[in-house]
Image 1 (spheres, rainbow, N blue to C red):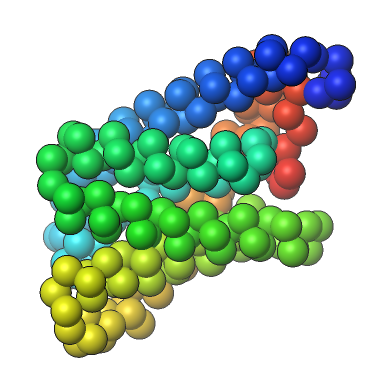
Image 2: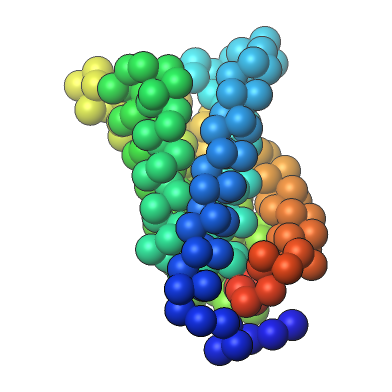
Length: 188
């Protein structure tokens, strides 16, 4: 595959913008699909979700620099807030995604070659739940909300495994597309 040195700066910026826009749109669609899945029937934890939109955040972290991936996190949170129309939705979505982003980015940087995408995704899933509990603490002003932490950590592990598996396949498939030629994945 060609290196990014073979592309002009404006061409790379345009490709990054297109990738972020596509990833944000797919993340929003995944968020909407996730909202339609009746997870409360089998998860028994209020507000628990599968974290499907995290597929796009971790995929973005594999291809693009952290600033571009952070832009995706912010854009995804804003889009979901516009769809659901509540500031608390933004707070929960953004803090969960931000905590997850920070942990996944750190693990990709620190654990290069030692951690799999599945391991990074699992830790990101757990961090996402911690971020959402932090948002719940801000909204409800009670530390009792952290009683959900053990159950949410277990859920983060399970969903993180599935998200990590999905990301492995997405990254391998996207790398074959010409749009992604200048961007070598960080992890596979």
